[in-house]
View 1: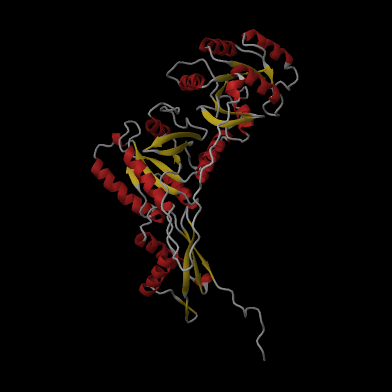
View 2 (view 1 turned 30 degrees about the vertical axis):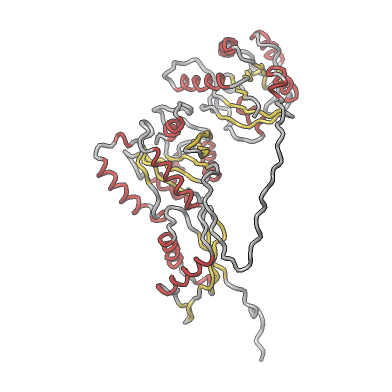
Length: 473
């Protein structure tokens, strides 16, 4: 992107609505409750012919630095310092407040370009608030309606005038055309090869867990800066915020999510929206790190979260956080291993790593476990190996007989990865018991080194050409 723009203003003036309008998606949570946004959320904005990075920020309020509102203000000030331009949003419907005046003075001291935006200008009686915005001394306000999309062309012109056309429209670089190696044709009779794991591809990782488990603190430790809002209060994070960083030359995109409580306790509309945003982050992630509080691990909700992640087909890694608070570490570690195997039989072999997000202890081991688990999640096995393995499994433990006739497993192949899924052609697939499927899945885990990831097996019975035809008499 050519430049960065921060959306700032007091609470409930429509900053997140404008953010969603510019990125073209409902990424930021929007509600009538003031102060919904807490962290700063980046996004790729498109406004007519402009392409830039937009940052949604928390509403500025007067508070001490130690309070939650004070820490939110520090996040907003960091976004202003990072951006090339600030969109100062005021509410034309309600008019100016002392907080607007103080924020305007702060932006003026920063010395960076500012575009004054009068939102909700479509409302009746908004003219007085629009003309009051001139008193801020930040130039002529741009009347818009973020909810209805009005005034976007005027906003585009104001942004171009503020940053300059050379920044708004950077010159395009000429891409040199080089020789491209075409893939060789597949020779008949050649056994299908198992593709190598691509360790340069960016990896999407979602961090989930119960409230106050230390998810945001963990990501801040990875980044080496206070990028996400943290504190002793439970439930600080609301939006699913994505951050990017490099680990040993590989791009990692992490998603911080809201803490997920038991469904019966989630009553407020805003918390329901936060949990729905966290569930969406799980579905779009490639790997999910489930953060446990090591001082109170394996709560019922923890087990529900692990089961949810595995049912979605995501690769999972357990992180036992707050390990610096554990005294007898050897005894606790042995107890955690025993409970992991006993309480999570559907995730046999799942990697569990003790860490401390506060001190950074164990983070390298956690990242290595993430890479190793993703390698298994992307694994593909050749059809020839699978069929040789299937024949051995049937010799060791033959399928059961139904009505005096034994079920035959004829052919096996891997139909997809991420997660690994296999198709077996067999007779009487509807009569094959679930216990035999578990036997095959456990065999795949052990013989092909596929721990911790969900494995799916589908069966297909060959079509009977005589089905439905009457017997001749």
